[in-house]
Image (cartoon, rainbow, N blue to C red; front, top):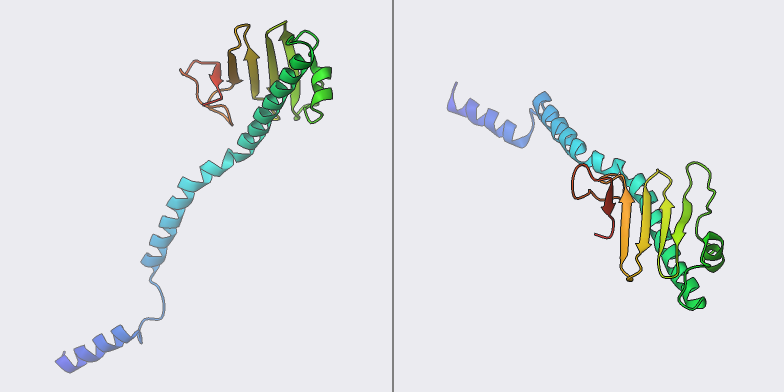
Length: 165
């Protein structure tokens, strides 16, 4: 092959005259890269509905806590008469206590003169509770650690986790 023919072929190749598209290998490499990116990104989107449901339940638990404190202020710093019905009077947006399956529900199982416990169950079944001890310390617990909006517990055998962190 002469130098002139080589220059002509090289010039045509650089000008793109003889190549009209991508090779099969180039297309396969691009498809492989897109597949890897999708495999990395998609799993993080699957859990978003559960997290949103749990975020709503956490907000409702906090609203119930504020309503409980408001009720206590109205009752001379006593939580005795602060039941679910009274909390719904103070904060109308709280979920009902007898909710149907797949909806949020509110529960105030224990309350005394200076302590209470509020429990909200989210639509996906996670339970978020706020408890106030007699010394004024509040604890925020959730069931099903590591799923939805309930962070992983302190150990793999934990049945509750602290959801304030």
